[in-house]
Amino acid sequence: MIITWAMPLALLGGAVAGTAVFLIIRELLPATPALAPTLARLQPPLQAPTLSLDEPSLGPWGWLARVAPVPATDLNILGKRKDAYLTSLATSAISGLIAPGVLVALLALAGIRIPIFIPVILGLMCGLLFALLARRDVGQKAKDARREFLRAFCSYLDLVILELTAAGPVQALEAAAKICHGWAFDRIDEALTQAQLQMTFPWEQLHRLGEEIDVIELQDFAAIMRSAGDSGAHVQQTLREQTDALRDRLRTDSLARAEQISAKLEMPAAFLVIVLAIFMIYPLIARLHK
View 1 (cartoon, helix red, strand yellow):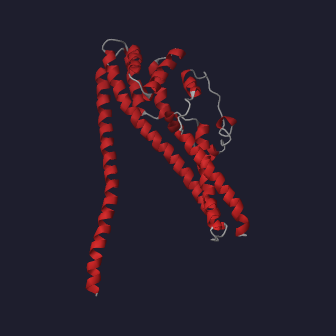
View 2 (cartoon, rainbow, N blue to C red):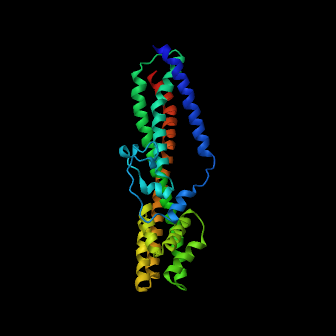
View 3 (cartoon, rainbow, N blue to C red):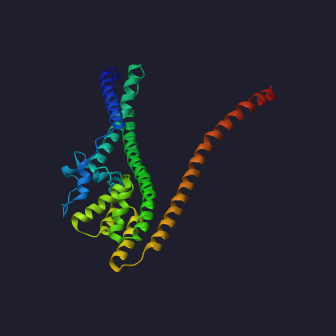
């Protein structure tokens, strides 16, 4: 039975290895910028149609959205589509599902016999594990993107405060977004351009952007600018306080991350010290026993 399964499993292993190499090369090569999401953000439809989770808009893996909830805010800040996320999730799960079969095929070619139920159980476990790792990777990248967005947002707040001394709130928001460059400033500029196209107030679009990417600080900033636009209140001091508080929080977060990294680096060093101590003490203990 093992001999009859060896050749098909070997062919399957070669196909999986080739697919893995192709996916790695595709991820390393620079991708073509997707213009459709940018245009959709600049001029969305007035009333977006409601879509079910298994409609073709989510691709062939749309049914996965019922099993694994789609992190919409994480995908929004990363600029990824839901169908691409579901495809990567399914690819990771399939890779983990067939990885034990490839290992069994290699062992079978080496003459080692393993019962067929072992790779089946391991495949299910690895498929679930790989899918969870893919989901965790998206969450971690989104967390890093939000941290980077907040750093850029601090600079944007400083520029808005300076522009408010010589211009109104609308002009200050637009002028500050044109000064600096980067993906975070591009997202803010897109929201302001969208407000111009729809003839709405810019703070409304900024508040919507804050909800889409799950950045509460941007929503608070939009509320402050709304008060400046509605009642003409002077908000420079309030914005300075928000900037100082945000910088203090980012500084504290950076220190906490640095301590975590330092703690992780100390563990291998402590392990090496223990190993060296064992090698030094063992000859002494061996002589005492003699």
